[in-house]
Image 1: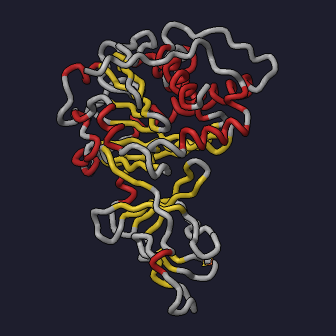
Image 2 (image 1 turned 60 degrees about the vertical axis):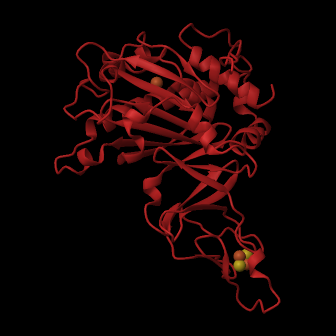
Length: 365
Ligand code: FES
Ligand SMILES: [Fe+2]
């Protein structure tokens, strides 16, 4: 039998250069974002043949597409096999083929080269398809991996806590906000992984879920997280702490009085409420800047109702998000200082310590 996993805990907050140094950032792109399964977003964005998105992962532009077969997914480096031009310049769209804007080499949705003007009969088009990137789906999300020989996504799925009662694979997006935080991606992760700051930074949140109400820590190879209990009389996270939205169909009694928060390494933050789910995906731009995509997911029947109104959930987390990015930006300024001499974690920052420990392991530090 496997012995229980003992996670490494960082002994103290991380050194400043790990948040600010461009070389460290490049190493992270190589050792973490180029090796792991990175959450690309919701499959809803790839809902029909030809629908595609592009993502920046580990310093690479990647195309993810629903192939013509309808049930298939494919992903490629966004690099033309002729002389290297970027093939797709849009963030998202729908295509029949991908045509390079330079000399019009044309690729099918499966990445095969299907047209190359004037190349003649000697040219072996079969060897000039777009270079594949691994793509796989889990719980209604698609994940991308640049590591051709890395573990299957099933290994991550098997490690994660059971979230099946939230029926993630069938939820639909009710809203989406995109932000650019002036902070290193790890500062955003660390911030998500503790609520020590909540009474100060999020008075609205603290009225609904007291910062001292953290439950048991849960940890695996690919995640860290745990529940927070809602305050008396509250049944969801919103300005009033209450919503009339029905429960997601399979949730349990304890889910009515708590919210589960998980950080799935490296870039997915998932917050599970009894009646909706919030996800953040983090997209490091450079050491001190991170793009964040926040999405609100709902039961499809609830979202299809004519009077569907997600604004209570959206307004609440949109406010919390901006409050968070502000203190994260202040922290980014501090960690860049010669005067940055961090002391220690507070007792409720165990998730954060485990994330930092995981990070040090990945970086070989
Ligand atoms: S670089 Fe793409 S067709 Fe020439
Ligand atoms: Fe926060």
